[in-house]
Length: 392
Ligand SMILES: Nc1nc2c(ncn2[C@@H]2O[C@H](COP(=O)(O)OP(=O)(O)OP(=O)(O)O)[C@@H](O)[C@H]2O)c(=O)[nH]1
Ligand SMILES: [Mg+2]
Ligand SMILES: [Zn+2]
Image (cartoon, rainbow, N blue to C red; front, side):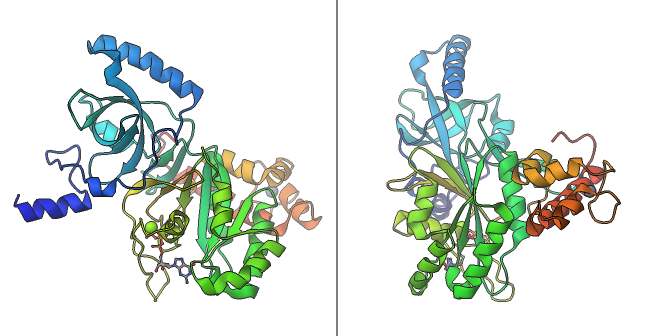
């Protein structure tokens, strides 16, 4: 490869990993990552690491001091960037993990890292089991579960506002996925400037009806002209702006932004960082969707707050086997469904339907019931079309 070609490849941090072609670490991309001490494994993961270190040191005849705890802080098409007490470095997978390792590892994973003396490249020996696993279903009946980030505490569902009412379906399915993964959920409505005062009022009301008072709700805008909307948001019991987002992710916590391409995720993170660290891109004027500007999954460390994972936008979020998540987000509807006469009730036309009765007598809100019914229908259909050999 010529010098120029090499340089441009490195700047983008690309290369075929796991295959024959390898690239040098793109160090320019390793800025604004968390520092050692800002992330901490659970007590269980520390114990797991202790046991692993002992076993691997014996098996590989190494000094145990060569093995360290690390956290994967950036995944792009280069080698994973891993944070350890020695700072951030790129790491390869140990031979026995290599193929499976690259497809299995996620940002946020704690790993057992070998740091051979005198090398600037680490070696991932093992991925520690996860405390949480934010995943989405990729593809249709022969699809697979794809982990977006591991060991995350909070999922920030990011949804852009506009002229049309905000998409309750998209927010509900994101919340179900987050709850299914055992994470907390909060909603961040971006681009409030485009909704204006009445649109913001309408959309904050809708999200409150959908998810209730217990879920963190913040509206933001990157446009200074929207400052006047703060009072509106606060009056409706929602947070406003970067400070309110920071409060959702205090020091010591790890969050992930989940939203469509063009929702303004990277713009929001840049505002939180106080400078343009992440690339942002214009949306198409024809349908308002983004162009998948973010391609790497990476953590950014917020000054005075926790850590957030920036992600490429996700076009679809199919629900497959997320029954636990559905019951956690809509407990009262799920309980009403226990009272349906038919076990496979679709809650649309069957006699003696507990869900429709609860909607009618007002014990379950209509926005919540409608979201529940439509997501439950989708899950029933996906369960029927799913290849039975696939393990969820
Ligand atoms: N009017 C308005 N535009 C915004 C706001 N926030 C972001 N944008 C614009 O929306 C477009 C998309 O923003 P990004 O931050 O790149 O979106 P993203 O969610 O990171 O998109 P992907 O990386 O493709 O997933 C950019 O042109 C931003 O300038 C906002 O508050 N108001
Ligand atoms: Mg982005
Ligand atoms: Zn029913």
